[in-house]
Length: 292
Ligand code: HEC
Image 1 (spheres, helix red, strand yellow):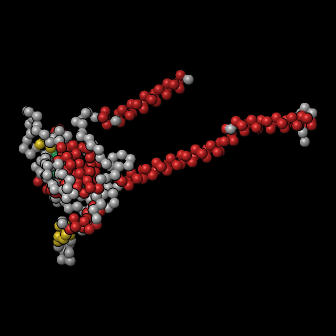
Image 2: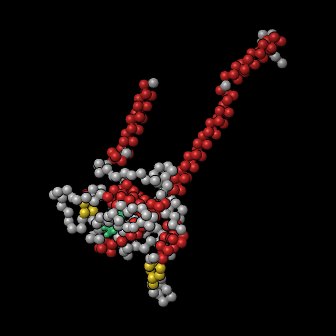
Image 3: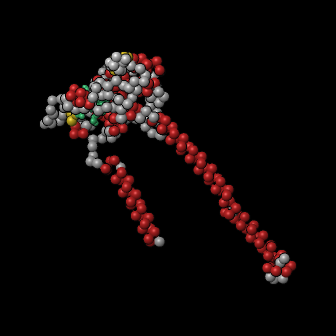
């Protein structure tokens, strides 16, 4: 008994230990707490806010795309289900705004043409070196999976965009380096990209800094996980399926075991045995085995 209690306690302590060390809050030195807002895509049933995604695309295109690429996204993704869901016409029109390098043609030369739905998002720089050189020695990371690659995801991007401040007194900053309280080391080589009214939303939403930060963070979360909605739906279906399965299994278990469990049945069986015994002894003397 004592041994069993002991191992039970050890199990509990082990469990608490594991949950503590696997909790991100304990597993590393405390960073600044990120700003938190209610994202529509969080949670089991979360879906993206379409108009926020469309506005987020606008912010990316008009501001961020000057430096950051999204190399894995194609223009056709913009009209796919679960994304910003622009109509196909709109997505085609968006693609057509860009010049894409294609070729070689029959003369062996590369040429430019206007973009099509099947084209990947046009990159601001041809390669990492060019991008780094143009940005004072810092590479503006590709945004295809940035929201997944950085701890905190959408919260991190949102906070970073709103995290520019004057450096505290006595803080040394080189040229082209800015103070941002959410960046590792508080130093970032990206000029504050957003300011109120940086874009003009066509749906009439006020383009405040916080609104643009929220929209672009939503857009980048979708870019990093375009199938999030399908995944959520599948998850919910799997859970419903399991619930139904558990109910079915429970009732069939009850049915299968009912004859063993039921007290009435047992009593009835005993009664029958008693009766049989009585009859046999009645007809064949005391020994029931001699009954033929
Ligand atoms: C003028 C060029 C430029 C523009 C415009 C720009 N960025 Fe950046 N961004 C950079 C550079 C350069 C870095 C790398 C900074 C560093 O490593 O210090 C960077 C880094 C980042 C990072 C990553 C920080 C990290 O954890 O490494 C995020 C997130 C980011 N930018 C988001 C945005 C968003 C969102 C926009 C549009 C609203 C935007 N940027 C617009 C140049 C730019």
